[in-house]
Image 1 (cartoon, helix red, strand yellow):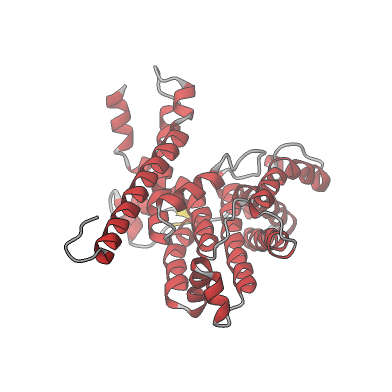
Image 2: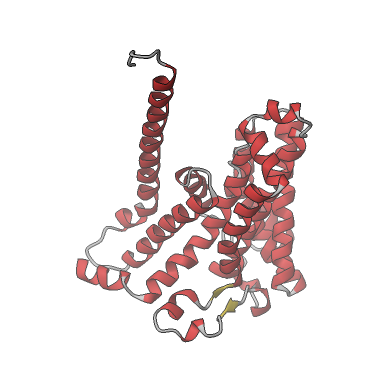
Length: 324
């Protein structure tokens, strides 16, 4: 059994599936990064992904254009995130409660909306046409390289955009005035406000970017990964993305590596489901066990770093000849 598992893991198609599974988690993780940098926690990522996945499919069906569907999902994601911001920033609702409400709408409200718009129950499989699906991209030259081409070429267009967004997000956060304002508001909003930065405006912008990224993740799920919208299809990816953001220490690159770890865990689960001698319950728990272990490791590392920083600060402030 273990020999069979190792053989499956070290095949190009397994690594291809890791990248494929990572993409929606990465979009959501970057969404969490941008929001957290501005000092707001977008816990409604799960709901946003579910709702945008539905609207991406519906809009692409109505227009028979996958590009319009993706754009529609992106716009709906922005609108939902701004709505969350309106309740939290304008009406002073607890943003965590607002996010939970959004997740509940994503879980149950989408089924009602699907029935309202189409009369279907639970999934949109019978609506799917080739024009609605995000195309795969075979990269010239790279696709002809043995092994490497099998792993890196032939992915969805949004897969490449997801990994490119890691660089763009880093560039925006650390090389633009907008990114500087976002980080300033997240680190100390009173100080940012004292130098003329509109704290509320920056938080709205950060939430809008967060919603756009989550919307792309939702579109990927329904218009490529599952090839239709299904109830419960997001399956906790929004929450896993929050864990990836935390494990990546709130940075785009770190969140990418964390997302790849969760993608690996999900791909491993998929490979092990058909193996004899493996409990289906044990296999299904793999991604969640990895999530918990990752957060434990992150918490331990954070505690050690904080203690080390405090010791260094105590050493600097201690009188000469006195040790603390």
